[in-house]
Length: 349
Image (cartoon, rainbow, N blue to C red; front, side, top):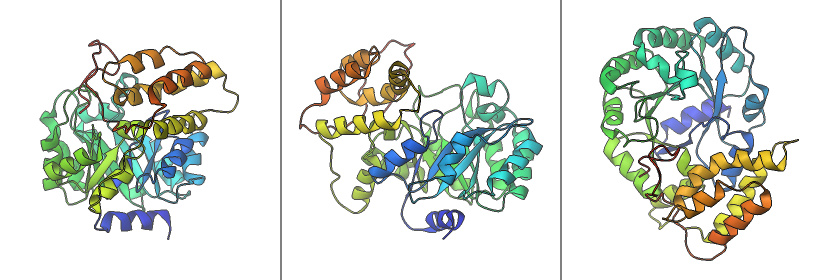
């Protein structure tokens, strides 16, 4: 079965759909492969292809589609606002084994939204209407959207839902925060539920899914067709397996400290790019460790120390200090004592 047909069958099936959220500079081909070792999600989404006048398909991101090692469908995500270029890129991507074309309407990075792309488009529903119309006509495989619930506030959410309903989307993924809320506030599950009620297409809930049990509660509150998990999967790659165990009526297995240490060793190997220096490699890995460090211990000591390592030896020395044991590790985020301006400050549960 081709990826698009597999994806359609997945959405039509009875089980909740589990997805790995696309995270720029994190969820690359190697990370997909790593997640697959832990059973992984039901489908994957690439980092976004930047689309602008004269842009070309990023070859590194395209490898996630052409060399997809997971055995599960992978969709390609676009970001941009130039309609002819978005259409051209969508048509190019359909020459490859993609399960779906996804439009990013949620990226909260200022460098993106200031160019009226990603979450910046949420200020202009009419522009979104035009983009979706053009892409829906150009895309013959499933066409999906990943969005937030507004830019400054959710005031335009009902208008945005009207636009989404107009274009026969195959799937809508809703991160239940506004762009300006970034990752620091509670998720507006009521607004995800509103999308479920008003749209005929499946809706996936996204934002702060930090455990399998809490994921089930999100589905209960929203009525969503499934869950998209990002930072929670970096911290706990077992989360998809744990969710499926609960679905089958079983108590999910919890990894030990040494299991987690082995995961970090595999993550270290997966994040190493050819030609990268040891120092650069460790610095790159710290992006992952910001998310991971929330679930290790409650004082913030692990996060403080791991942020200051500069070599692989230092990195693994800190990891062993906290993880070289056989006690269970729940890996749910603690309410760490962080400064208000810390990258990881905010609500994580």
